[in-house]
Length: 254
Image (cartoon, rainbow, N blue to C red; front, top):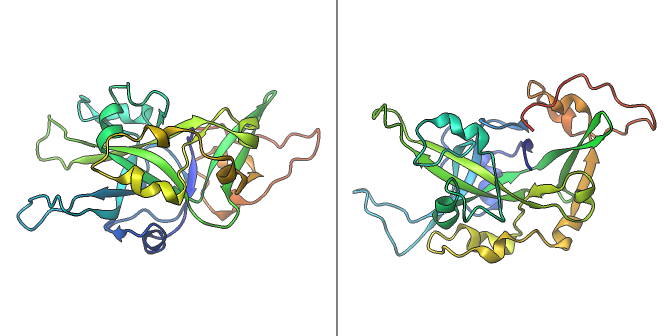
């Protein structure tokens, strides 16, 4: 699964990297410990609307938007369900009521510097950070939804998202059996295309070449607490053999 990640690049950098327009307005600041229910930056591609609100079907616009991590389906009675919808399994999302509409019509990319995962070794949970070796952003496949509070018609529309996961491959499978569904640049346009509902071929685990370009780095258990947030969380930490690092914090929201 993906329950924690790092996203530190500013919107201008992401807009250039993903060839998108920055429409975030109030984007979240650099976050080295992104946790569920936080606001995150997502990339979508939609048909723009003119000044009268009419949709221009002849073109599309790729843009950066701010969403809340934890998808709230349009039919949900209240927004609290979102905390349980941070991930969607790529193998079954098309059949799940919470995700099938978003998979068909509301797909996004969640850019990340890297993600955290924990390997259990007896009573010890060792966190690892996975990040591209070349410093580029990961493109995690995501789904999004718009939710209206029927009990408060004046409340703003809540835009939420979920990270798609898949079977871990290669050395990543030695840490955890699941991983985010990563998209290579050649798949971005097809994944974001608002006029395409069939993306089955893009739901397979990433290629061995894409995974080989990642660095798998052990890090300190300070990342276990969402209260900790800073570049030191990304630093390589090599546990002393046979001496477990003191687990000072309980793992939250993983």
